[in-house]
Every structure is written in structure tokens, then in C-alpha cells.
Length: 344
Ligand SMILES: *Cc1c(COP(=O)(O)O)cnc(C)c1O
Image (cartoon, rainbow, N blue to C red):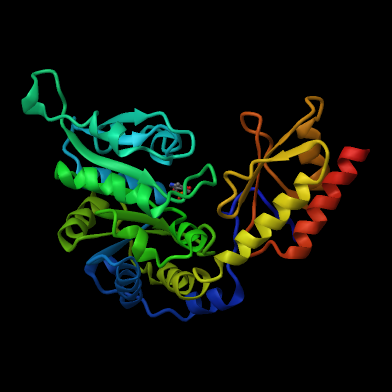
């Protein structure tokens, strides 16, 4: 059965042309460095983000945690927005794997100011009580639906430079951020030392993310990837999907953004709904119901009966996500079904 699935862009299954590329991939044992397709993906990924080298990893969380593990000394401190995925949704892995302390800055939409970072930077030789800052993390696009501007990124990067600290960019949806700002992705990644991005979200690959950075950083990360059990064998089948993701899927994300805008505008016309237009920068629409007596559990059920999958409200907010498999007609179907539910 075909559903309209608005729960996330991670639900994107592979289009036929991607499956064909996977089926026909030339592979080898990548732990021996023998897989030509993985090699091709890593070279392509590095060049797209303007870094010396890149590494294929199993997931976004794996890539983020591997980056922290590679950048940071145990017991050091990472400055990061409280709302970032690394803090909010990675099971506390940073304390387990890298053994670091996360110094959180309150920031609901992911924007951290250079001055707020600067006053938290510390060095262990300053005071017997202090850990040393080892890394600054940012996230773009941010999971609130916000996109950090180039100048917001530049400001953070400049303060990091001043203290000789690296910046890691959680760019799970970096291509959405670049599409939203209408800039080349390198305009964003020039403000970080390492970047992680996902192939398996809006880009439709089945599995995998990329970590990119300097050659020295990636060489170290490759060994630590092995330590974490992330050395993969004939992963060229997955990398082949990643190559299609980068070559074909990364350039069409503005379509998802346009559909999200259409969805937002149509939803906002419904009297009981208030859309968050501030955070309508990528493929995510956030909205609230203005009346309190709407049973969102019943809505989830009603939608499912009508072949639409959504997540229930979280912290009073609904989120609908558009992607490759959500077409303009689907957006209109969803809006009509929601009207039907509210009028019933
Ligand atoms: C999805 C996501 C991740 C993690 O990716 P997985 O592949 O699900 O582990 C990391 N950061 C952000 C901002 C994300 O949205």
C-alpha cells in the first residue's frame, strides 16, 4: 500500500534509478581499501563540501560522535546549543564514546552567538578547576526548521579561530540549508573544520552519512570508525546509492521546500491552525492547534485510515515533513483530509 508519509524525510525509499545503481555497483572489501565505489563516493563527497577527505559512516549519529571522538581529548568540553541533535537525540553518546562534557547554550532555534561561546571558552592551565574547551559544534539546517545564515556561521568560526579551536558542523540536512540560502554548499562548509551530512534523509539513500575534513582528521577518524565497529566490507552497494544521492537528489530539494511552503499556507488558512512561519526554511512545517480540544491521537488514527502517516504532537507542536515521495497533489490531499477531520 502506498502511504503519504509526513513523519520524516528518513522514510524516503529508493527510486528505481537508485536501486539500479546499487545493483550494478562494483564492490570490494572496504576495510582493505578495495571498494572502488566507496572510494568514488568519498572523493566526490569531499569535493562537494570543499574538504581534503571524507569517510562513509553508517549513520548521522555515528558520524557526529565519531567527529567528537576524533577531535576531543577525554574530559574536555564541547560548546554546543542545547537544542542540537548531539545533545537532544544521541542517547548521551558523547559522554560514553568521546568522554566529553557538553557545555550547553540555551538556544531553541540553534543560533548561538559568538559572544556567548567566547565567554564559555576555558583552558585547563588557567585554573585547577577547569576542563579545557576542545570543540565548538553547530547544526545547520537546525531541526527546528531554522537555517543559520552565513554570517551567523562566520561569527562562530571567527571566535573558534581566535582561540585555535575546531568547529564541527552537524549538517545532517546541509543540502537543505544550502538550497534554502540559495548558495553553494561550500559557502557553508568553509566555516567548519569537520562536517557530517546524511545521505539517508531527503537524499533518499537507504543507509549512510559522510564525515569530511582535513586528510589528517579523516585518517584518524577512519581508525576510530574501525574501533567503533564501523569498518564495512562490500559497502559499495550502499555507496552507489550515496553517489546518486549526491549527483541527482541534492539538486532537487527546493521542490520539497516549495511543497512545504504550499502545505504551510494551506494549513494556515484553516481557522484552528497556526503555522510557525519563522521556522519554515526547509522541508518541515511546524504548527499548533489554537483550540485545546483537538484529539491529535484520533487525528493520527484518522489519517492512517486514509493512508497518511504522521507523528503525534510533541511539546504541543505538530510537524509535517515533505520529501521526494510527497508531491503537490499529496499536499492538497493532506490538507483536505485534515479539514474533513476538523469538521467531523
Ligand atoms: C537525523 C539527524 C542526525 C542523525 O542522523 P541518523 O542517521 O538518524 O543517526 C544528526 N543530526 C541532525 C540534525 C539530524 O537531523
